[in-house]
Length: 75
Image 1 (cartoon, rainbow, N blue to C red):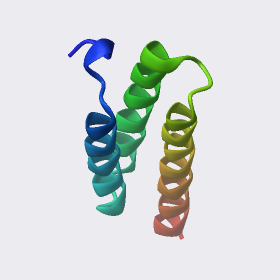
Image 2: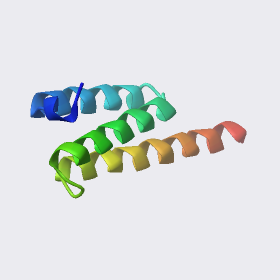
Image 3: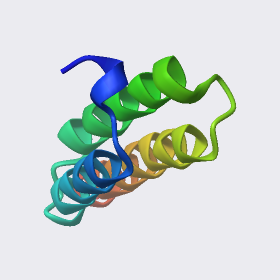
Image 4: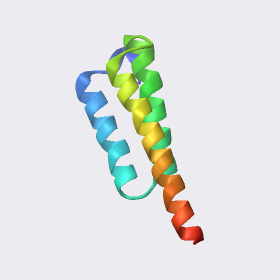
C-alpha cells in the first residue's frame, strides 16, 4: 500500500489492529504496528498530523505497559 492509499478508514482499521495486539499483551507487536502507522501518516499528511501523534503515543504506551508487565513478572 502506498501512503496515498491511506484513508481515514484505513487509519482506523490499523489503529484498531494495534490496540487489539496491545490489549492481548503483545506489546512489541503493538508498538511496531503503531510506529509503522505513525510513519505512514506522516508521509501522507505531514510530520505533525494529529493522527500520527496519536499513533506515536500508542508506541509509548505499549512500550510502557510491556516494561511494567516484565517488571511484575521478575518479582
